[in-house]
Image (cartoon, rainbow, N blue to C red; front, top):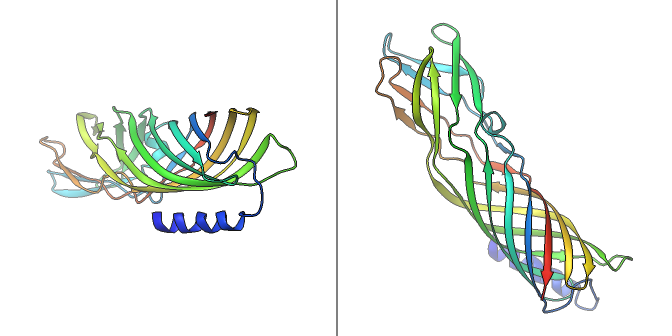
Length: 250
């Protein structure tokens, strides 16, 4: 995928070879950015519980979507870039996403309907690193330039915990997700607004797809009410970061 990204932007660079774009060639830049990153799972499966008496598997009614488990994550990042020519910018980016845990309410369907609550006691927390490129387009206005971009890298997600209330009994500090790192990549669309020659604001919207949380496993619970919780896979993690950055050129 990284090779494909390099080939694509090299072809764009060749296409713009005889035109002058809005960027200053061979110039470096440092960008600090922040915003929000609405996030969801590509699928949301049910939760299965094993109750000792009678010994049965109980399915929870309700799907633990990301928005039911966590608030909207905020996105903070730092980026260093280099203008390959007047149209193409290469960049290296690192950042983090955090979101406050919420309470997820579900209903047990068997053997009798009853309330099931999961309180996510630890915030969602993830760290990322990407390499990417952007293509800038000339406009009639010298201080504004739209761009498209793409990036590929890794996302590290920290361990998550939850308190579960089953039949009114508290089961504290259960594993919800294990620490995990995996491949992540995305597409960008944005606008850069130059306030001065070496100072600009960067508005960016993205679609980023990453490997999902590591939740597809069983948890053994040493409790008379419950003996096991079986989480199901939530698929891929899809986010839509919307950020505003300030960039310093040098």
